Length: 251
Image (tube, rainbow, N blue to C red):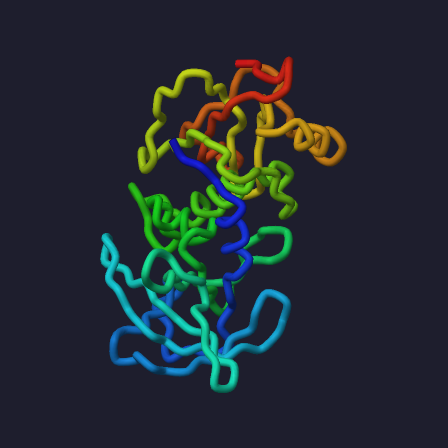
């Protein structure tokens, strides 16, 4: 069982697009800053546009051959971990090629530091690494669909509709994440990089009100969606959750 949290969503907002970097990886891949760059100072721009000064404090290899980093925000003589703390040490971040707009859309150019615990890093750590392929299929669309799913961004407009500790069960058509048998959960929706399709229910009642006002065409009609390879509009991920409104638990 997977769960989203308010802290995870807040961490996602801390993702920073770097203005300067020591060197970048191949097109579409995250930049590489190895141990030779420890102590390097980078200029960065925050989500709200403010310029920040970052220092690279640590580099750690992760399963799969990629690297994560611990960084500090420098403010005069003061410093604090960019991503806060986890346990006894600083929380880490991973660099992702490109940046994300306010509506949740990915765009090429620059790169983003995504803190562990946020949806950008979480989707990569769950196997949807946007710089990789699986069976000849690029994983960037899966990573993007995953960010929509975790945030419950049903309309694909950047508006998330999940809450702290909400359990979900997700799977995909590539077998990166498999479907678990979790009693009481029913199909919620299928997901593309543009948001949900075939919405059967929402995680919370107010989200269904939003969908009906904003993107009613995304509500389920006809047979349930399936996560099967297909055309460009085919869903890439599906998820289940617990229905919380009478009459929403259709399956």
